[in-house]
Structures are given as C-alpha cells and as structure tokens.
Length: 404
Image (cartoon, rainbow, N blue to C red; front, top):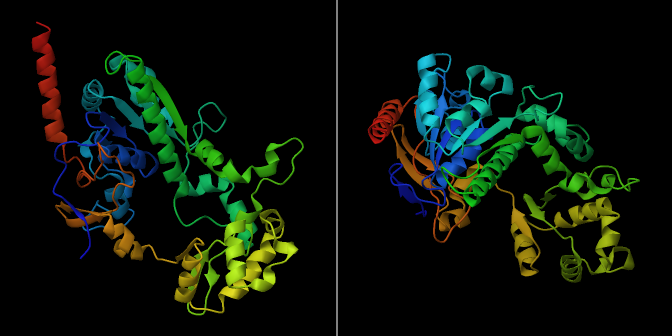
C-alpha cells in the first residue's frame, strides 16, 4: 500500500497564490511548467489555446486523443479556453479576460504577439497593474531577438553538448529537456518578484505593474556558467571555461560486481573514512588533501572505479552508509513511481479524470500554512469556454450596474 492523496477536482483554491488569476498563452513546456507551479500553488490559471491546441497534446501517447502525458502533467489544475485570436470576437473575449487578471504570460515571438494586438502596451492599457511576462528564446535586445528556440538548439547554444563531449568524447544532449524546465523556473520566480513589487507599491488595482522578459538562452547561459565559468571569469583567465571535475571522463556511476552505484568519496572527511575502512594503502601525502586529489581527479576516479568492482552494490551501500559517505543506487525513472521515500511522504497525487485515474508527480515544496496541491486534471481543448464566457458576462453586467 502506498501513501497518496485523493483529489477529485479543482475544488476550492488553496496555497500561497490563492486568489491570483493568470491568463496563460504559453505552449509546449517552458511557459506551461511555470504556470503549472502557479496552479499547484493555488492560482487560477486559464490556459488559452488556439483551435488546433497546444502541440504537446499530441507528441506523447495518452489515454485519449489530445491528452498526452507531457501536456497533462504541465497543464494540470488549469482551466481551458479555446480562442481563435485571428477572429476579432475572440480577441475581444481575451481583452475582457485580461481586465480581470493579475498576470498575463505568453510564449509567442514578439512580432506575433504584437500583430495580434496583445503586446505589453496594449495589455497595460486594459489592465494597468498587470504583470506581463514574455517567455522568449532570446532577448529582444539582441540580434537573435525574434529567432525561434527549442530545447535542443538552446542546449547547443549554451554549451551543454560541448561539455558532454569533454566527458564522453563526443558532443551530446543531456537526456532531459533541461533548457525548457530551467527557463520555466526563471519565468516563475521573475513573475513572482514582479508581483511582490506590485504588492509593496499598493497591491492589486493600485500597485505598479510591469513587463518581464525571460529567455531560454540567457537563463541557460547563466545556469551553465555557475560552475563552468570557473577561471575564465578572471583577467587573465586561470582555467578554460569548464569545471574539470564535472567533465572528467571517469566521473560516472561506479560498476560493482552486480550493478552500479553512485558515490562521492570527495571531501577530506569522506575520503579519510573510506581510506581507513577500505583502502588504508591510499593514506599517503599524494592524496592527503582535497586540493591534491582535485588536481588529479581523473586518476582518483579511476582508482575508485577499480575498487568498487570488488563488491556487490548492496555491500557497498551498506559500507558507505555506515561511513556516512553520500551514495545511492541507480534507479530508472519508472522506479520513481514506487520509491519508498516518495511514497512515505505522499509525493504522488492520484487524480480522477474523464480518461481514468492519473498519478501526478506532486508538489515538491512544502508550506506549513499554505500548502500547495495538484488541483485537478489538465483541461480538454476548450473545456471551460462556456463557464468562463458566462463569468465574463456576469462581470460586465456588474460593472454596468455599478456605473449607473
């Protein structure tokens, strides 16, 4: 029996963003990942899609057409509104929706959103305190400003295949859409910071709104250069622009007698414990400090690799845990769905949908007073058109009465 949470639908909003309304014109993963977290944290996110729908509806297999796994995951808990923004009547619906919103976020190219009439100046004219977040591939301030971007091309631009090549002998992508997700997290925190500024300057209706730009290339360049800038930051440079330990070819899971193990016998405390218990002949001046070992990290990794071949994975896990050395078995992504730790904390949330039960990866952050949760399934295409249009009519009616 695993610990999980039952969630029958969106229900009453809870979480630190309860009461926030987000108009979401993003697609694929970059923007939807940011707004998925907003929805988990209680925001009302209205996903606006064209008649053909978000492309991620179709790129992986799901239980029903247009409900592929990636789409369902990053659009969970949102309301769905289908609009054809080539039509004036649908553009008018979007304008009325913007008038009720706190955040407007999109991932169209700058030229496309301007052509539709929803650039920042146009949206601010409707809602002056709006937080308007652009999710682009490249900053509009540079020559690549209107260039399309995808995870693979941004990985290439920011040096990931290069450093993978330093490690593996041949350039390669990392096996996750890292650029989309890292940029999505940047879009989330940037939007939240702008909302915090609005709150400090008067709050909803009175505070200062602003335009925010978040770009995949710049976000990933910043992300990659945290460690890989290294000595290239200095004048003159003291090292090439890479962190040598991270790209060392021998930095890999260690092969054991019956499998593999991840272990970090690295700092002086862990190294000395390992040497004393397992390899006392390594207690020499040559390896006596982290600085000395870091200077020959490839050789150190190779020696450790030979040593780990002498025992089974479980024997090594027992030994390393007994020495308080960081270690872990290698798991598949499938195995995460039956992970003892994740199940013990109720990480996965079971949601009933029209297509059957879905087990969602849950909210990875914890709040003592305003916890987030998976608020419900992803919307089918245009699922909430009727209810949203009815609400907008009610708002318009109320404003008309108040103005008399």
